Length: 452
Ligand code: TYD
Ligand code: MG
Image 1 (cartoon, rainbow, N blue to C red):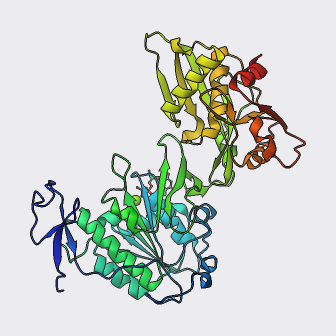
Image 2: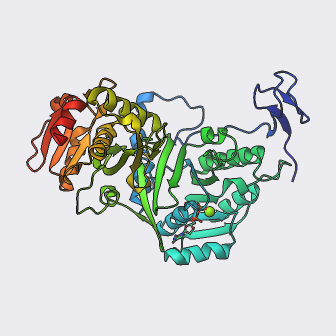
């Protein structure tokens, strides 16, 4: 096969050279030259029935009519914005062993009637078959090939003519046109570019599995994330069986969606009602525990916040958080000290979000404050109580968005009392019969009301 012309390009300033250089002569950056193939036609986002370069009226387009492949996995459909867009390229990142191969193999086996090609670059065909046996699914439309050479993968794609191709993983794929080793930056970049072009041209959806580095980035160039249409991360805590599929970028949908799965002995099971698993089975109220009504995307979730405030043996007390921002915790502790007269500075504080979840939404502030005060006073909060509100520096309780969605979820799960901001009063349009809404304006008043 004839070699395509390649050039070495400085990743800092973009200047090019025919040979690799340790130091860029124009910007002075060290070790910034990377081999790139020159002259590749650009890949476009799928445009059904419109030729490249054709001029059309914007009003004549109807992206809603974009036909999506709706998969049997509802969590995945939602995360992708309603299904897989043909011709789109989706990067799935995650730590080793988290379940990336499992989720996509399961998808391949569940999509009956949709032709798929699973390209395994990491495991032998028998290893993949063993995993398929383990999840207990079969699909006559799922084809598999153990291949790592880009050109051969594209050839296999031509033969099978699938609607979906799964590449496990992009770090193992290399092009014969480059001399550098598989997994190197230029190879990953070149292989991705080749697959994107192929996906757009043939209207095939391509999933790329990508490894994550110690720092939590997809190994390889950051540009990979810019090139693809959608970036998903599969994450979870080693100590829990829950796995969360999160969108980091989506050209065809919202990035606020998450999908929740549980890893069992027979593969991943989508969790339809996350609140039920995130609330530990409780029969007795315990101090330091409160429930927050949070939102992930458009989906309401009730989560348990656990706090332990105990006298510190050291002059510098500890502040430890799991699943919650440590800076935000410091801010809330300062509010409790200053506005509620609690002497937190001589206590160690541990804060934990149950289920190994990470929550960034400030709407859980109110529940965090309540659990801290509950542990501090060693007084319990009734089991059927939950909270939603953001806290400002002066201790005021600020309103949160989509309050009615949160209240309805709490009501559905049998909660009887819901604490929220007084400013949310005007956003409530319906009456709630089985849940009592308690509006509060400041943290001081809230804690007075609960703990007396
Ligand atoms: P895998 O999909 O190989 O992870 P990745 O591709 O992200 O590296 O998943 C590996 C882990 O999942 C492994 O530790 C075994 C576990 N597992 C189960 O617990 N149950 C199952 O049914 C399967 C298939 C895997
Ligand atoms: Mg794998």
